[in-house]
Length: 291
Image (cartoon, rainbow, N blue to C red; front, side, top):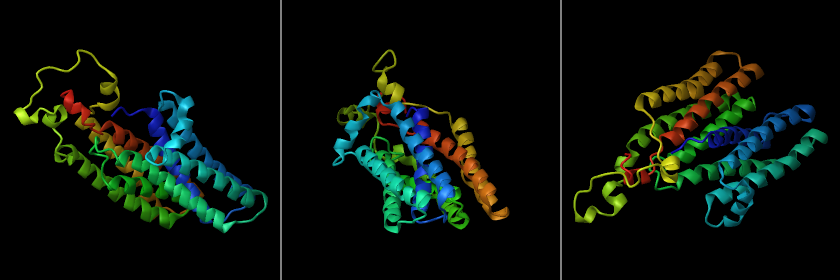
């Protein structure tokens, strides 16, 4: 699929932001006053910045509010509701820590649940799509959740938790890539099923359905070269997992190491997210003979 920069920024930043909010809701790190203000400003900046970036991919951003009305059937709607609820709860929780020096535990725990729920609903937007076999796997929400919690742990200065979660995220990433490379052939979807002509014999593409491009080809068919894909996977693995993990294992853990590891990790996640969309083979491509 077309790897729109706005969606890459959204999934990268919002994951880090809500991951950090999760740890802050648990009271980690223990901060009040200006220190708490800094952490919440960073978390809200990433979370809100990511959410705002996502609206640039909408055809009519002014209609985004309508998504909140479809919560019964739409994971996008559920994501919006969870995100807003989480930010409102954490806004109140932050007031207590920053201005009153009070940690309202119940409010913090509720915010943490909503924050991780936001990441989960984001992942389910993609996981539910049977038309994209690479995404349609339980490993997708596992990858989103471990990345969010691991990146958030780095920003929160939780070295041991970050190490464990990044190891888990790295393992999930490898499994996701291995499964994804076989997902389309194993889905059973072919040119015959895409056209509905399989019952009358073997189906082959005689010529493209259109002489020029169209919306479907632009948004849902993006072919990335294997060599280019392998290079970006290496970048994602090294920056997103290997370097931060080595830094946590070798260097004395402190705010500078945590911040540097978080920045490097975010760059790796961005590369991984680009591949997440670029390598996604939508089955509509079969109809156009693109797979």
